[in-house]
Image (cartoon, rainbow, N blue to C red; front, side, top):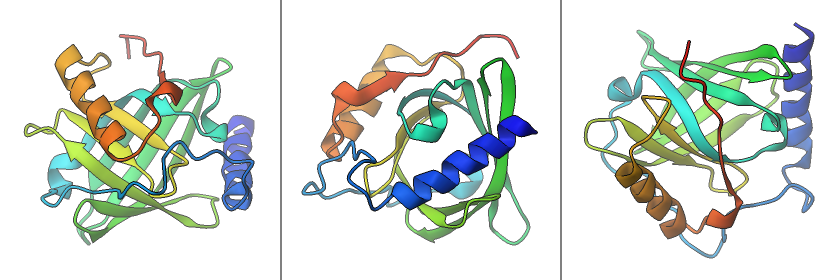
Length: 179
């Protein structure tokens, strides 16, 4: 529970720092950012493994990071993020709702704001996804399996670069292959 409180506190601090130059943007704001024009939230549901990210302060030290999205009757998505940090499992739950093609707002428990979460690309079979924030302060490569084939990783990196992300700051997320 203490780890969850630290994560929530870190997310709240992130909100306070969002307007500060001290909180890095990994994206060139002069490059237009595009989201998926055809995006099916029901296909997006299920378990995703984070294989790489632009590290946000609240994610430092996380391994085995996963996100579970569930479809709700009202059309929103349930969100459960978890990672292992300092030997503890840290979880945070929330809600997501579609606000445009490939564009979601995500609200997490204990965080005083809803964040923009844009799906920049998903392969045709919804096995690999690239997600970013217009601010460039976060971005993720997600995959349905803990490891990602090199061709889809290369495609995901290209999407991030096309959307102005600095690939030199992209960090691989350690994933154990056991549940």
